[in-house]
Image (cartoon, rainbow, N blue to C red; front, top):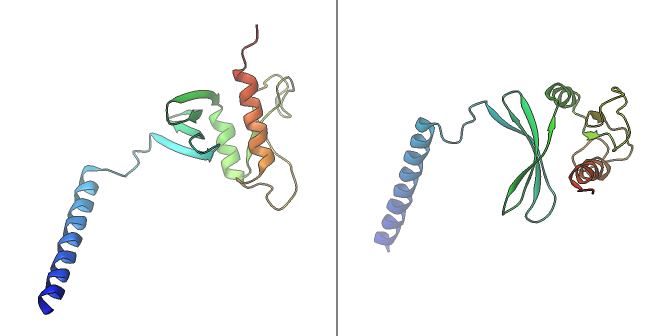
Length: 145
């Protein structure tokens, strides 16, 4: 009986030592740390196997759709507008197709701040904000002949 308890304690100690060694090795090699060049600004699951990601690579902000099979570039955003939106902590949406944005009369892909009410307004769970974004992205990807 005591031999089994001693064996259990030694086994747990060995596993803990292996984990500590692996963590130190990963830290030494820089695994799991961000280099600062690539940053995921926002991520939203769109379905069971698909997601919409906003990624900043150096000074470029990209909207990327990802599934199990592929990753697709959907749009490129203005970095200053994304930074302003992050500072305000307000979700943003693309202006509807054909309508100019409120602060830029010529650009239809400019981000504009949302103005909605309700308990989820201004959060990632706000259905209206993501719905507008997905609608605009669908409009951009439709092939018209």
